[in-house]
Length: 285
Image (cartoon, rainbow, N blue to C red; front, side):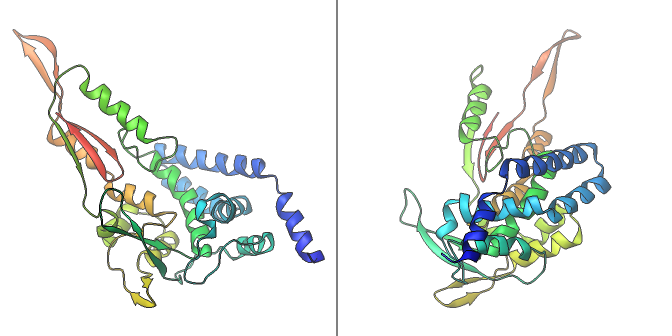
């Protein structure tokens, strides 16, 4: 190992990651609180501050090149398993822009069927940049998401969704509908998603570029006019944003009704409840 490689390896390993995580968490907490207050000006300012901070950039690079299981999976540029020197270099290259590489199409088996599920693998740089943008957007939307949405959310799991279903049907017999949205990730409307995001132009242009980047499958380039690539770091968050509002619509269509007997309040008749895990959902009424 050369002296330069040894120096960069020591420099990477000497980073105080817990300190960086605390800095980023404090900014994310302030973004969350600004979103709850509806203070859009402060929200946008804090998001820009987070994305420009070295701490957030370093954590984004670490997560996609060291922590995530896909660190050894290459995109169209063939880059994978980055060295400490390459990671430090990548931190300096994380700048938002509209020029992105297409994703690499990989087909994997779909459990329980003979179908194949398409994954879109971005380049390592795009993955790190997506992780950075996700850090800024996720706290804003966590303050808005419905209480019975569980898939791809921090601090929530499939077991929480199971518990919510159990608590909803345990006391009274109900009609239950179990369903999912067919090819949800592949059919998300780009225009509707970007309008719903309603974020500042720099992030909007960057996300639009990722959505329109296209895919490379067997050395052939295909355009992407709809959907988000399964395999992207930010794709689960974008899918949740696209599906945001389902629970509120169900509550509006089947509201709780107050029961009055002989002029006195006698309780209420519960309406329909929607419990969602990503694109799979259960509705009880």
